[in-house]
Image (cartoon, rainbow, N blue to C red; front, top):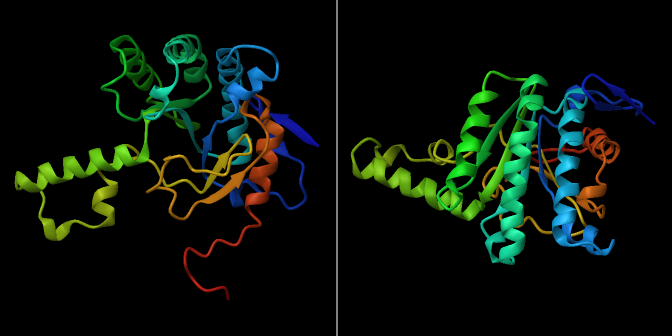
Length: 253
């Protein structure tokens, strides 16, 4: 049903499909790693490792599908509540993934950015994140944004704090503050808003992810656990996006 092109992308063989009609920015809540591992009698970290491998496949599928921006939810501000073993294992996985994938991401035209509060992350991980951002900053084929220690309420709170500091210092006139002003203080200020948000694993929650940015995004909740979320499933969802009637609050003609 699908043909492979380029660096591993999947172009859906669907009548009438056009990458130009598809979503430019897709955001993904990658859920279900733990349940996937449990179903196989393995520890949760086994599922996280399987999920990390799936990221590469989805990133590679983006160009042929017309997806320029991909944002993935890797670790939330609430995930610190998990066991110390799981959190430590995840942080180790992030460091290993960045180290292992940096050159391939650069060579395949992927620009990587990280959003979220870096203050609680360990210095070695933050240094790797900074290095990867610099290493890939010249790329423009796919823009991969990784939300790490990210929570939308935390993001908005930090943005408002910085905005208030600029008002207090006289650098910003309160009369000039509007929606666009706040957007410039968000972690995602250089990114377009997501057109489509996908959540895997059958959960129908948005879990504090890109709340401001997703005001008019389309949502797709799928039962598939993230380690089983293939490029074919991704392509099918993207191909169906063009049939949606997006009115942005306007009346249907």
